[in-house]
Image 1 (cartoon, rainbow, N blue to C red):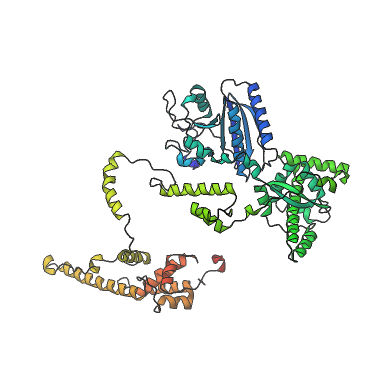
Image 2 (image 1 turned 90 degrees about the vertical axis):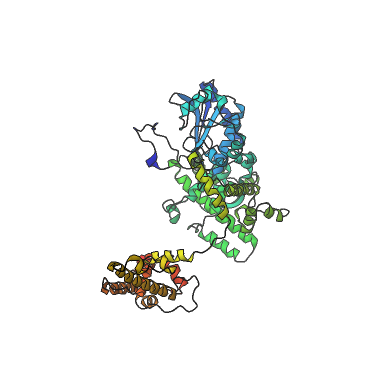
Length: 620
């Protein structure tokens, strides 16, 4: 949004400074209508926390988990929470699912959820929104109540127009005084909450297990705090040279030295796994010998050696992330990262004797579990089939072929269908929104033009040679062509203007001279192929090519300018030089990039050298 257009203090529309959420954050507020006591709010908070713990027991939040706290602000008492979901947008939709399920259990509960984009639920349903609802007036209008999506209309029960953005206090007053006036559209709700159809199964399906080879210490930490994989991955993914400094010195002891390695199964979300797997990372000093040995084994060509190396590289990345996260735990606001630092402190005091043995590790749950990661591979043939729609999908339906998993295919199909609907919508504008109807005064003109437009709608597009010639002359800086002369129209006879008019005779002579000059100009342009769309097989030599080859663009341009300067003001300018000058200047202004002059010269079969008059730095 353009900040220059926002209301400022003193303006009539100014209603105070609006707090803006940081990027990648979702904000949620829970209000009770009727009984607004702290006891009732605390009961809801405990129910929400319990539901979240049960549903997300094995889930790994990207940065922050779902959280609620009681808040008293500006005379309002409510539950509030903000979660930073980072790169994992599934965290945001999981929170929306939790809140909707919570609203089903408490009829007096009204929930508002937004993010840095504002009312993102309406963004999902943009195609089916009523025309009166826009980003300018949708603030605080969208609420979740009893599992349904409800919207505050423009007109309240009292008939007061609320066309501008609602304040939170006004929205709550409308909900409390006239809840029946809120709109519940099944179409808007279906589009806005479409992603929730995958839940609660999506919570499990979005997890990924992979076998990883890493130090026993790291395996112990991840077993004791499985959610520590998130801050470890984030620390590795956002690493910088300063955080890697301890790994570059052989004298500094590491918290997780690469010795006593074990292979265990680690639980990720798909986003976390993809962030680690896709990163190219040169082995650090302590790990280089192990990685080099693994690469030598891979040279034998066995699949087992490749798997061992892949697990070792992934373990190196996780261990590096754990090290960075633990060393910066005191400065971190991540609770899990601080818990890892405390576990390491206990290990330092008790010694490695407390670490699990091989038998203990084998007894861990899902210690050998590994999922297929083919969902990371993109087969563009399957992708194109998915874009083709039902016909493309049915070809390999029996084989289970397709782009990504079932959820990804469903999302992609929905995106394509929405895009096709937009393209087929004759009323859609350039930004996807429908245009408002024109005023009644324009109805007659619209009707009169409608017939002509429909007649020309399906006509084949043709090439206007005269129009192209005019555009070429304008681009080259040549005088505008007299269309009447091109059509063969002769000037009026002397007798028509009077024989005694001396000035008329002089004008006739000037017209005749101009006509000859234009004919010569057109002949020159045709000779050089400037007005021809067909590329000549053997283009004639021109002063342009000669100047370009001998002296470069800058030198050629200077020669042309000198030649033009030497011409008298009343003398006819040589068309060769005029054409060459304009084309050279146009070509030089392209700075080595594609442009109209370069394309035109290519059609003429002329290839110019680089501009030797400038330094090489100008071409970088």
